[in-house]
Image 1 (cartoon, rainbow, N blue to C red):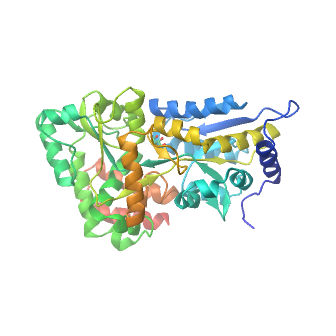
Image 2 (tube, helix red, strand yellow):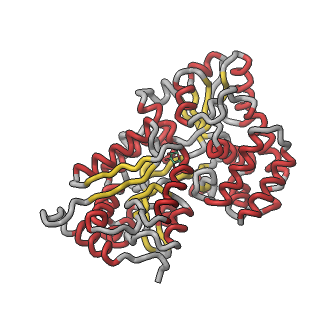
Image 3 (cartoon, protein in one colour):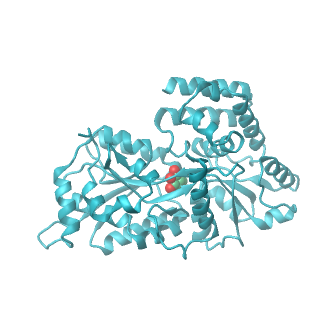
Length: 421
Ligand code: GAL
């Protein structure tokens, strides 16, 4: 029997609420307080689509946004709310955090609705692994984001006769040309999760998928201290020279706006950045171009999910049931992911509405899955979370904001991760 709470009331309500259709007048209105951190242009448009779908189906949405990309601010709010016995009904979390909350007995059991909606048939096994605990559904995946992207302004690159780089040597060459032309080569926000986002794309690019997993999943100390990891920090030192003087603390979407407005040539960021371009009416392939960061067919996966916390009240429980059902609805999966810049969590969603960047993500995901070059994001809490992720971010950010040598960086990284285990 799993250690997380199998909430029999919720199970009954989920079955009752979903299988028997609309609630009778006597039943409370399905209500959900939703904790999330989707507050930028593209993110807000995507979460609004979920809110509108929920309300159109009779739900009462209680919005609980926590500003701060990457989710660290939200994680702090969530911990304090659960510890004070005031958990929100639905929370945007992912990766090992889902397992950790399930182990703590904080999550509701979604098996009934998963069975009712056929989740085993419409979700790829890699997502089922993320949202199941002990074989039971405890969260609902909403998307698949790719982290390892370069977003570039083609007009800016053309000023120096450059194309989007396909190797790190080309990246450095292009960046040097932009810098010489007085153009900020790389738009960046100096926040730990953003530094770690660039870092993990370089780890994948220079070390490869097996190296990435040995470092972040196996936490192999020799790998963390290896000459290859030193080469990663050498490249991070070079990249540090390509950001503008005001990068520190900048929000990721403001960095995206720099590329959009021609103030910078490129940004290395997950494809939630595409949501910003699209929300501003920019056209892929015209106003911006997308290309994977240089690697041997790698793909860094980040998937957002909603976990349903154990809450009281029939209205909250029926709200969770309705939300869980809507999130994996075929039409919603199309609408939400077009806005969010991600690709559907649900298999078989029509591709017609998705642009070339999304189609490339779908194709590359399939190729990477079969070649074994698909990895879970460390910066975005798929392959790591908690103290290990914190250790990685601390060392990478300290290196990025100092003159720390690569030799010192790899030793600090190994020591910090060893302490975090
Ligand atoms: C990621 C999250 C994305 C996006 C990004 C920026 O961790 O998975 O959905 O929100 O942060 O906030």
